[in-house]
Length: 345
Image (cartoon, rainbow, N blue to C red; front, side):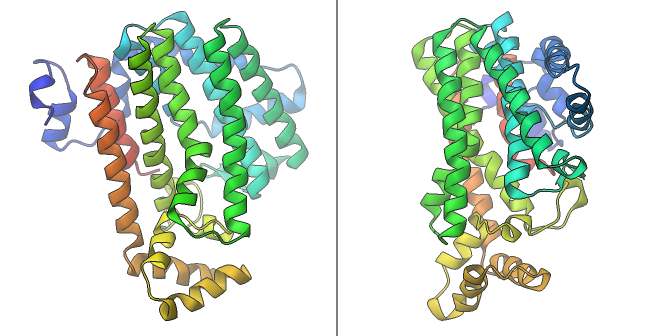
């Protein structure tokens, strides 16, 4: 489908995918490698504090450092739409700060004791420190967003912070009230995950001075990619893999019913699903019951269905990116979409 759009002599999306190679994230980063290095330096600087407890907690953030997908999205989108500007790098920093702050707060809400296979800040210190360090990082993100002096960007960030909070609360409501509908699940993940990726791609386009139409396309690409990202994360929960950094069944243990289990419950007759619904209603999440619920979801096609929806959203996302003018950064965005659904952690 994309063969005719790729230039000769580049390690392009088409070559990589046709050859069946595993995606190396370094290949994705190539069009913005220099700017990505600058981002890393600025991000480290942004987390500096003279307060001892904050500094020690921040060291934990460094050691559990993630893949930096969000800043990479900002930079690649900017280059795909024109060029990376100082504001693009600035945006990459404050959006990753916002994401990092949200993770610290999420760990407190979910009582998560591990983050990417390492003890979380609330586990190493306590909830008070985790919340306050999260607030420190969030405030730094907001200050840096304001320094762009672009009201469009500031408005997006203000709205994003609200949407992410609403998404987390919506997910808590779904768990508490046993709301077991796919549409409610999608509403929650759009707010808590998709809106952040959507902001990354939209702001990337804005900093490259793209047209309003291109900004809109990029925003939608990020939104769809966010669905893919969250569904992939939710699928991880049905498999015990130490590389993911959390035990299987963690979402179920927290009362979260994600897409694989949702589909299994919705597609099964009433009499068959009664005992599984009973476990959820009673919040009886013993190791044996968690294993039973995971097995039920797998046996009734829940994981396969979630994967099919993830691929569906990925294809819609890549169709949008293919409508942009061809360049190396656009190829990398296509690779990144594949990387999101094929990643192992």
